[in-house]
Length: 139
Image 1 (cartoon, rainbow, N blue to C red):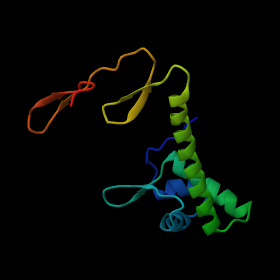
Image 2: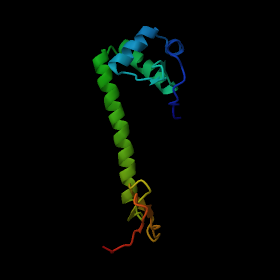
Image 3: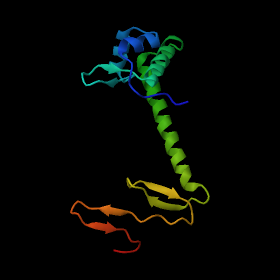
Image 4: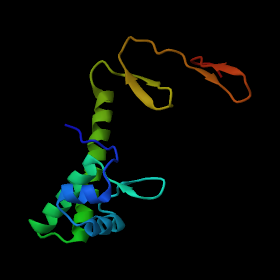
């Protein structure tokens, strides 16, 4: 189950939900352990994911005896692992049997498509107002 990233809880509510003092949340924010969203007036707004992260910081600190610098490093490494897992899953799509045709999507990212399916030819609008069609092998 994915956790909600919508910043919605003010610091007092988030602190109560996490079982901490609001000043602790401010300190964790200053240290970069948990970075809540901000309102226009710069007030902190915590998401469900932020509150789960606060609980994890508390668990590592109290139950495991890890200092705040160590916790920050653990969180950074966990985030890096998540990004790498996503990248590996993306790259695996390129080596699956039958997925050897590569095209570019609307953003210009390379994507693998099924073999035998001809990619649509993108039409690009250039700032000058002219239209350019992509043609394979043309220069």
